Every structure is written in C-alpha cells, then in structure tokens.
Image (cartoon, rainbow, N blue to C red; front, top):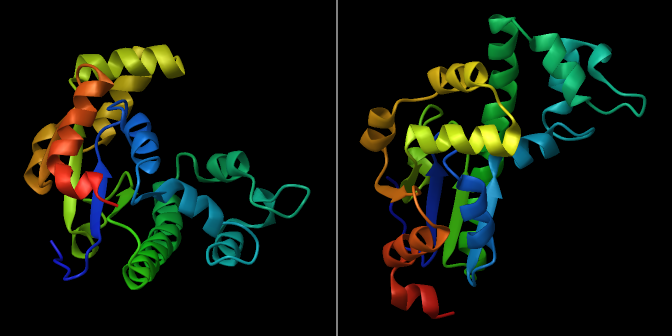
Length: 209
C-alpha cells in the first residue's frame, strides 16, 4: 500500500453485496475529520453531459441511450449492454479509469488542503481495478453469507436465484481477506461495528479534531 507522510489516511472500503457497507459509510461520513467518496456516485457524475465519460459512452452506445433531455438514461444504457460481455467490457474501459483519475485527484486535493484525518473510498472493484496503489489501507466489511442473504431478501426483495447469481459474480471471502489489511465483522449490531472501527482508527486520532 502507498504510505504517505501526510496526516490524512486514505482507506478503501470493500466487501460483498449485503455486507452492510452503506450504513457504515453513512455513519463514517458524519464523523469529524472524515470524508466518504462512493465510486458509483462518481461514475454517475462523470456520465453527465460535459463530463469525462459522456461523449465516449454516447459514441460507443449511440443516441438511443439518451433521455428526452439529452442525458444518459441508466435503464436504457443497461438494456443496451445487457447480455453483451464485449460491450460491457468497453463501457468499463471508459468508466473505471475516469473514476480512478477523479479519485486520485480528490486524494491529492485533500492532502494539499490538510483538513481531513481520514478519506474513505468505497468501490465494488477496489481489488480488481488495482486501487491499492492509491490507498494507505484496504478494509474488508465481512458478513456471513446467510446474513447477507437475509439482508438482501429483506431490503431489496431479491430472490434466492438472484442472490446466488450475484454471489457467484463477486470475489470469494478468501480473496477479499488476502488483499485487505483490515477486516471489519458486521454480523451483529452496528454498535459492535463502530467499536471495531474506532479501535482501528485509534481513539486519540478519532477524538482529536
């Protein structure tokens, strides 16, 4: 991992679907000295007209993916890509590097400003896209498969078949653990998760602002 001589620590947050990352990151974003950046939100921003991904995606997929206002319609784009692995790969080759460039620039900006203690970056593909080079630490939010399944059924109404398909498409627990520096267990209460996080960040650093 990249080590910085700056005060701010950059922490990547990853884990399987249903692990509870969103609630944890929402809590972290409210803590003093912390900022959270969600890669999905960055991607959506970069797909807006005038941003880095808009014209390349329009050239690749055609005007059929645009809505009446000339913006990319996410449902139309998803339908255009569905079932075409080659096309999906080309879309990812446009979006992922642009997101990584944006995040790298934000890290540099925050280091220069010197106001943050912790910058958290959440992305589904932190490991696959080689983000370790721009992070100080990589955290794995882990929850047992049965708990993740129950959460997805309850919160999103997913069927077992859909959940099985999603689980198969994601990295194994062993791979996550192999690449991550810290494992946060989210099998119980959120309070227990927050206690783990506060311990990892260091009570002194966490409280002083």
